[in-house]
Length: 355
Image (cartoon, rainbow, N blue to C red; front, side):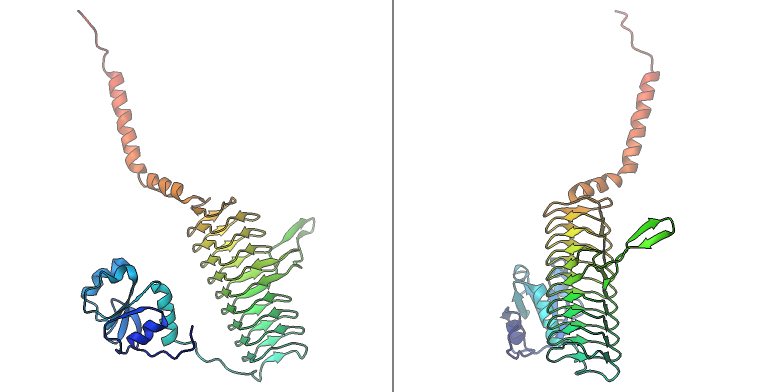
């Protein structure tokens, strides 16, 4: 984003998102809102054509619309027209609701080993604990109660929210955000049966996070057993996700809440995982595979696959099977009727030819 100072006017906000202004360019606004709830001082968001009917009743002072929908807006309404309205929404929301200022410097209750390296503009909140041999880059922000175990390496522009634990020797890249309660580099779930019972297998591999990553609250990423667990650059992970030991997540993948990926599975680049979906161990998931919510992947997938269900199947086949399932009662009644007609025909006497 440009360093230019934008104004909360229609034209200023339009310039911010590289859009086109239509209407009162100097009208000022206080924020964004849905088209149904926006006031005259707010910009209503119109991204989906299903909400076009709301135009008749909206009180919004202006609309943020896509190029495709702009032609359907009645003349006289102020608007910002943009190629990517979802990106524009994110940019304008960031403008009106910037991140709150965090505490600068190191809080007096923080416990920090003397044998660490910190870059410029480092801050640590109350009760932060940093063990020895940790290496922190520039502009690292550690919120209260964060624990960084020995030997961890963290890059530049990293923000770690309260109660996150980064385990020993974890590597985290640049421009990473980790939300509250996440656990990075935890021991994986590995045991061997013995005569004395279950014996824990030590996990001595690493846990490596790339750049431009976001990790949601209370997500757990295990360290590898012998090899590494790796999260590629650009990956965005939601809350309450579990990534098991030795898993590799390809660049730019999107993983929604409550997803679980079992050990040693490889996710290609750009995969998308719906909420509560998951994958079995030792699989290879092709690039750009899309997994529907609540699906369980038990077999390898090719690139650009779309799968759903448990065990997961090709999306089109799954939907076709679902359509049949909801017709079971109808098909059952038709089958019974056919059986009745056949039994009736069998009971009728055969025709004779007396001629």
